[in-house]
Amino acid sequence: MPEGPEVRRSADKIERAVANKPLTCVFEHPSLVAVQEQFTDVKLTSIETYGKAFVLHFSNDICIYVHLQLYGRWKTGRSKSIKPSRRTLRMRLETDTHYAALYSATDIEVLTPETIKDHPFIAKLGPDLLRKGYTASHVSRRLGKTSFGRRSLGALLLDQSMFAGIGNYLRSEILFRSGLLHSRKLNSLSKTERATLASMIHHTTIRAYQTAGITLDDQYVDIAKTKKWRRSAYRHFVFDREGEKCWVCQSEIQKVQVASRRLYFCPSCQT
Ligand SMILES: [Zn+2]
Image (cartoon, rainbow, N blue to C red; front, top):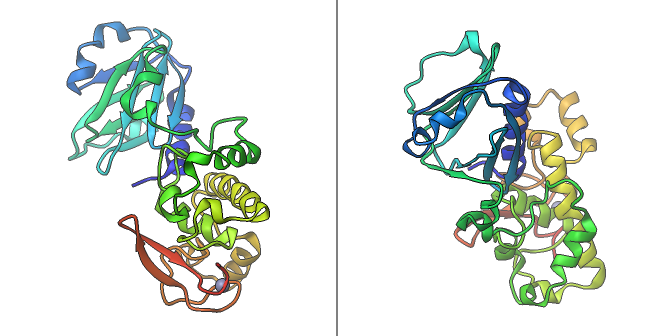
């Protein structure tokens, strides 16, 4: 499932393709067919992302909520290049030149700007790490809330009510970069450890957004590139690298299950 950075990049792509231009909207999902008549002569004004959910804002003051879950897909491109798909079309937004089409998703709802915050999925989310103006000091203040203190870091980081958008690869990478083991409780961290964790939660998520999913530092990425390694071999510090050598200390990366999801760590770099 895509994580916050991938969802935001996908929203950027849809905006680049079809935002702020006159649209032809083709709606096939039942909840959208009901409002089809209100979508003549409209523009897509922006897309907000809430962790793994999209909210499309239109110039008619109607919003469309989409959660892709495991099977939903967006496709964008030039209108000329639309190819028939075996997937079920849910909606297609077309300008004179480009399109954005949503396939297979089932979690689609019509909202208004006022009802977004009350949507059952959005209402439960913590702050989105990729929201403009959300900084490492906001992260740090949120970590300081006593109600989170007794949770283990491995469980806490996946909890979308803590921060929206952290998924499985970001969890392992944030913990590695913070030098912390998943089993540590938030309230066991020293002041310095907590500050490092806050900074790495923020930094790693932003980096993944900017680099399309690379969380490994540039110094190692550059080494791998000069050796002409494939991209998947230099994406992460630890995630999906069981049995391979830690980039920093050469120890063997280990894998465990935490909160029913796989987690990777370096037994020497993380304490
Ligand atoms: Zn290491």
